[in-house]
Amino acid sequence: MSAFTPTSAPVLVCLWEEARERARAIRYAVFVEEQGVPVELEWDEMDAPSWHALAFAVDGVPVATGRLLPDGHIGRMAVLKSARGTGVGAKVLDALMAKATELGYPELILNAQTHAAPFYTRVGFEQVGDEFEEAGIPHIEMRKRIR
Image (tube, rainbow, N blue to C red; front, side):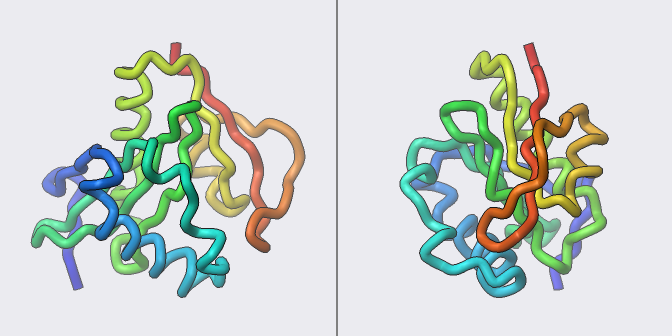
């Protein structure tokens, strides 16, 4: 099991070519294996033009990922079970928000799994609209102004 400490583990923000193998492994474990998302729904054409964040345990093993789409959507936030509750998800989100700020995006949008909404609320996201289902999982749209 890889150890993660939020103060010591790096987060890399990179393009899909660099993130592909590691991000796919994390997303497959979390979304497909754990949550039962059909594999054909997990991979889409938006990976290539997006920025991807990867967080690593102290031993260099990737434990979390997320992506920032060209339109300001954050998505595919996934943390391996062994690293949950350590703050690594917050580090990934912070890295993606910093990249969005650097790129001049005025607002961030995400579709949060309903159970994860408090995580996003803590960093300033607000719910927009009613709950809906995506890939068989309840979600809510959330937004945050960053400019």
